[in-house]
Image 1: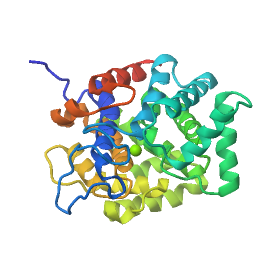
Image 2 (image 1 turned 90 degrees about the horizontal axis):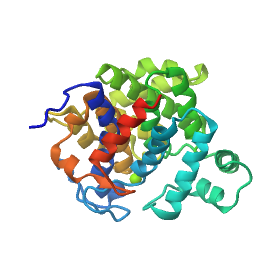
Image 3 (image 1 turned 45 degrees about the vertical axis):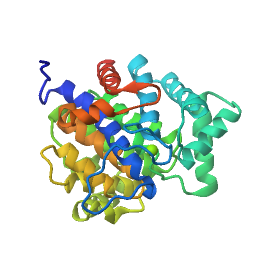
Length: 322
Ligand SMILES: [Mg+2]
């Protein structure tokens, strides 16, 4: 019989990536109404969705997070070379492994792949900020959905976490709100891993620039007072975060708070895999991989040919790198 470390930090480090991946795979079948989900129905990892995906397969949310995690495990995320490696990893993914890609991410990475002007990270920033200047609409949920590995890379350095979470968000999502959401969520993951509880998100608004703290405090309060489906459509990073936070605060009845929160997140509707991936990172960080059903851990898998044990290994390596 294998003895799992109940509630240990390692369990929570592993739970961060596994919770996100399981949320992603649980939400995939129901993304934008791909499969019906009745009001009282418990979602299952039946595949389908926009891929279409195999049962238990994760989507772009986890695929892009894996790219960040691999760079972080190899050499950390602290310098410019790491950001270049992340962008190169994403463009390789776009060419080879991407099963579905968000609009903003596709626009930015497509521009990077089309021709090099500078370093990969600088090219990405130029494309990202150019898109923002042209459209004014770059606050999609696509940087928040992949941000969890950044938190694991800076568990011991909250100031660096703030800076790097925003920098990695800005590689594709120039809007300050997308950066804010990544900073806020990464701090929630960090505290959850270290303390073994879901932190009070309202307290962490202090990590954000002073001029936007009041807005974020209001958005967090609205999420706590509302239900996950109140924040659909949730392609906007703020409503995606609100839907995920509302699901964490209003879980379905289940012995595992992670399962209950993820079921509630999928019932938010709309971008179900992303909302559940976002929620799953904080839930797994707080309650550990041991809060996930064995069946989910057996089934969950995805690009680039990884399974649950590979994500455990990756998560541990990221957290130990610094
Ligand atoms: Mg997805």
